[in-house]
Image (tube, rainbow over all chains, first blue to last red; front, side, top):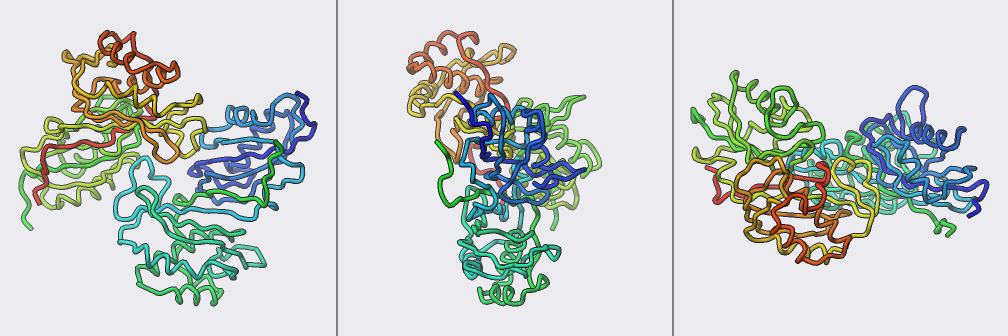
Length: 257
Length: 257
């Protein structure tokens, strides 16, 4: 089989964010992009630029991060980059799938939707093997009220009130496609899909919704917080460990085969 | 509230077995019983004897281990031992619940049924955050055939063929109440309930069943292996990391309240 001399390879990636200083490569710190970069350089014999669909913060996990890179490797078939990379990667990063995609595919710019999930253990203690992957809260949550509170989030809104103060995006308007609470096994999960998210936005949204649920507030309260465009109006950001970057959706099927 | 001077306290315990040399206390190694013993001694100011419902091997996890101890503590309410112990325990052990039970309750002798689950990821890579909690196998498993293969296990049988050669139990007859494969999220799970289990028995059973599935064998093959009473007839023991001690069942409700 003759391989393209400049294949565009898409990676679907999972990571346990516990021991990473987030996605983005940094000089000193251990990051997911940094570790992937090292593994790609080993396979290629030279540095390889890797583009991710979005950054995640320190401690945040991913089950469906997507990234792409252009490869001049002469012998590794596209779908075998999975095994080849996994054999060079630390165990807390796993490439779930690798495949060749159109040359035009860009994992960040082509993404039209990103989905996050926040895992909450309500009442019962988080079991030991899930201690790094969920947030424990004692007071009983009201799923119906939480979903009423979350309903005004869908649509196009300015999310300034829910962004970290240090977020440098000038435009803080985002399009939220859906935001709801559901049960998943022993967890209550806050699942949110949007075109893109501001810094700490998901963790601040869920922290605010949980607080408003305890206060037995109504959905008009969330509207007011959004309209105020002030971080001080919102509730606390919940810990990173409960958050998973769940998946990325693209406009069209980009697989070549 | 006046507390009994010699309360019998039941603990429901979860642990991530990855960094433990199993349940049973040992002089040198880090064990679950050892860590619980240290935490109990700190709370009581003297050593406290802790009885577990059953041992687990190095690397095996538990979501529903049960243990009990007699406490002369003057001030901690029974249900608060959970918090008190968790604050002294390493994060890979979590007490899920604590409560006072009848003086006669014995977590090991009173258990009439123990349930184990073995988690298998078939085909797809184990996601990074579940890497220590499931076993990956590539060839496609046939759930229907696996359940046919497992069906002769139920009932009273001599499980010599599935015990570690070093198992010192003279009597290797055990009563299996149920043994079946089912889907749980992205996993195939082997769930087995029995009165008690021999050393490595669950991991050898599931290893043998997976092998026989690949060989397209029928359930008569399992019967022959049992009848042979020889470890060499069975398949490999699968890795500890896929195995969870799921729960223990007792004859009657033993809670005092």
